[in-house]
Length: 154
Image 1 (cartoon, rainbow, N blue to C red):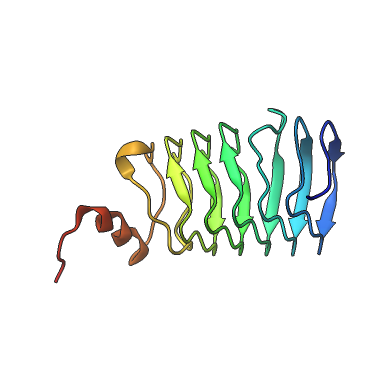
Image 2: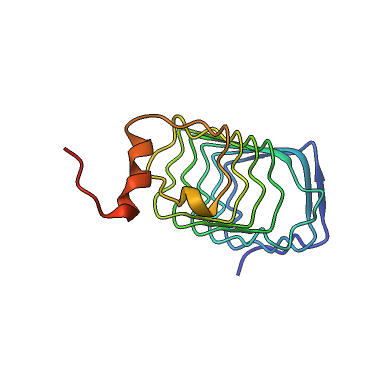
């Protein structure tokens, strides 16, 4: 069991080299916070305060996290490991995933409009079940969208 930050307000905070794994964040507010080199594994961000985030995550591990029905618009993830995490019905409009590893993460019913995946790797999600208008992708990673089609490319 991790730390219990429920009902807390963090404003203009920097979290450096912290282990926040399995933390409870029920109705927690993070405003203008920076997380660098943090281990934030297994955190369910779903019950977080809707006044979440103006936050950025840099060089942090966010594996096995749940982001269900949260508004993360314009958040920045830079050089983060975000594997086996779940983004379900989340607003990720204009989110930057700069040099992030998104292996085995689930994106379902998300708003990914204008999100930047151009330097991210190992993402696979259905363009049909997410809004991806004006999202930015790059080759060869964008070809992973074709994986579910079970086709042969030569």
